[in-house]
Amino acid sequence: MSLGLACALPGAAHAQTSAADNQRATELFKSGKQAFGRGDMAEAEKLFGEAWAIRRSSDIAANLGQAELEQKKFRSAAEHFAWALANLLPSATEAQRKAVETGLVKARSEIGVLRLGVKPDGAAVLVGEQDLGTAPVARSVYVDPGEAIVSVKRDGYVSIEKRLMVGKGTEQAVDIEISPAGEAALQPASGPVSSGLASNTAAVDSAQPVADRGRNKSLVPAFVATGVAVAGGVTGLVLTLAASSKADDADALQKSLEARSQPPSTAPCSGSQQLADCAKLKDQRESVDSSRNLALGAFIVRAPRRAFAYRRLAEGMGKLVWFPIVKARFYGSARLAELAREERRRSRMAFSPVSRTQE
Image 1 (cartoon, one colour):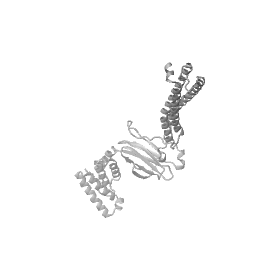
Image 2 (image 1 turned 90 degrees about the vertical axis):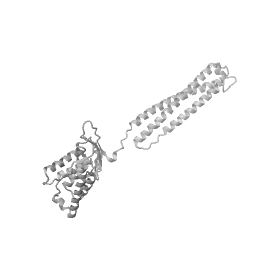
Image 3 (image 1 turned 180 degrees about the vertical axis):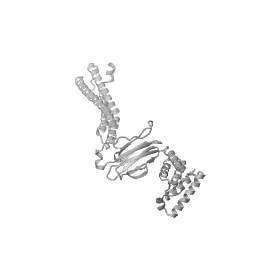
Image 4 (image 1 turned 60 degrees about the vertical axis):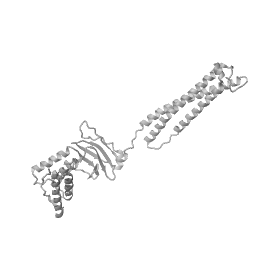
């Protein structure tokens, strides 16, 4: 049922509205009450809204709020009920006052209320898409449940956006003070602001200069991954050096065997001569081959992890960084494979199938 408030106007509002506008607002108001009586809340809201745009009075505000409440538009309903209650005419009855108060209580139980303390005066204040003008903000601000974003801006100052979670039926104070641009670096970080929610509801609260958001990526994962990758590189390097040392020893022994063979030959172990030294040479060649395969495996397995680590490090630094060591490591892996193939070729040259059978 629509609220039967008196249509009389305060003197100031009447003085600002022409006779023709007053007549039009009255017609729209009456049509809105008829639509409300039919149960057409959308049409009633539209007509009351048009009347409200022409003439702001408590009766129009209260009936507009009631039409919005019936459609579960709780935030706008609370705003209109609050305005109507604050501007009731002395001629309003106690029943009319109670009706407006009841509507306001119902609407506020479904939304949250913010009481803003903003400094300095003159700063522009927005809550979501609600433009609240400039500080100080004297009135309570009604917001829908969920995340609310309070933005404060002023020329020459560092802008701030504060995010907080709002629950149904909650009320909380939010204090925000922005600093002159030249002093922003000297100001301590803002602490969390109580969300005003029940203990089982998590608050998400943050305040920071808009320009600084998203710059503080952690470098810890990059350094950890880099450390693991470097460990793999060290393992591969140690195995490579060991393989090179063993290869030198095997080359020296093979040259000695070639010089002592009768007649001199590049396959000194093809016959039955120098069997003990040939067996030693065979073991050395196999050891070199195994060491190089292990080194190759260490480099290949660690190279993708290292590439990822360096990429993460570059992203964390916010720069495009080129690490030649990644490219060099892949080339190193290819060279190790080539050396391993060469080692197997030398082993085949030094030993014939006959010598292997004899062993």
